[in-house]
Length: 76
Image 1: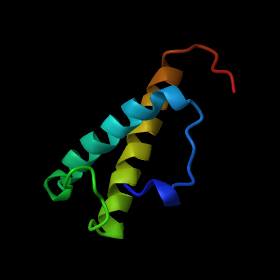
Image 2 (image 1 turned 120 degrees about the vertical axis):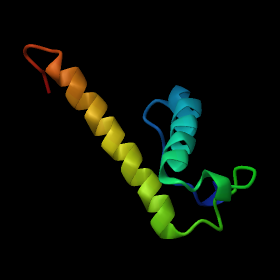
Image 3 (image 1 turned 30 degrees about the vertical axis):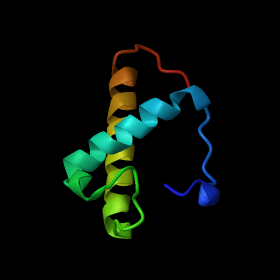
Image 4 (image 1 turned 45 degrees about the vertical axis):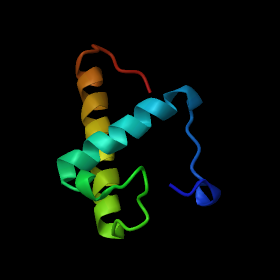
């Protein structure tokens, strides 16, 4: 991945490795993991990259909703 163009910063920098692994897990679910060569995503279509990001967000929302369901009085 081209580091020169990356403008997104993680709120918790220590989560970088876990988020990267999560991204590859979602790429596998979407079915594009075989197209990624040595960590290079440049030849993957925008649609496919967007699908990976969309699946990541969907999974994170599901996890957060489950954590809220386990609490009696959720705080925001």
